[in-house]
Image (spheres, helix red, strand yellow):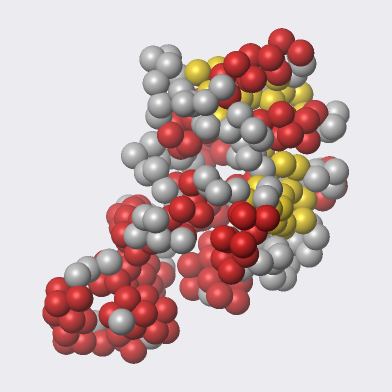
Length: 313
């Protein structure tokens, strides 16, 4: 196996050393591609030091040396990658020694186009643990049982609660399949939930298989300045960010004729649920009344309890 690991770097001076060191332990990794995204801290200098110290560490910036976000940074990393396989790591996370154990066997089968695993949680400080433990606890982010590749896309959409989730940090992709089958890589205009949107589409186009799903292969580093935890803990309205996500998924699904009609309807209901959840209270009641008339099922579904009711209080 020849693996390229892509790490977008933004505001991660405290963590990038650990991330890179966690990847260097694997002989299969032929290159660690750092995409420095105009960090406001000293991350660029640290990346330069790492690139000088290790032959396998390659440092890039965007052509204009400006900030373009995680999506554009990952896309640039994919463009620069030379490995047969691509893996991703956030700069404040790290790999565990078993990260590619399952991949070594599964990728011997040419039908396997991607492998996903379980993600653990590491709190960098007691303050971070106190702040975010209600959100993550000590739980694994994982798919709960081994599913066939054909079930991954509908499972993520229809059975989110019972199916589970996998993370970009635990995903390894056959690069040839990625470049041939994905019409669009990460969408650069999305600044939040861009990885979730990518994983939905990826699981539709590629055959993804479970690796280690009951034991972590990587760790999510949780600290006070995590970008996504700020969203989930309502520094940014989570309903607003998820409404944008499902709007994007809805628009994409309409372009794929092979997606079953019932799946497209489910996606549209998810979009509507978050659009209602993010609306002001008076508008929210009006939207609910509208959908009671035009789409009674979406109001009667579990989405009502999850997204509408809590935001009406």
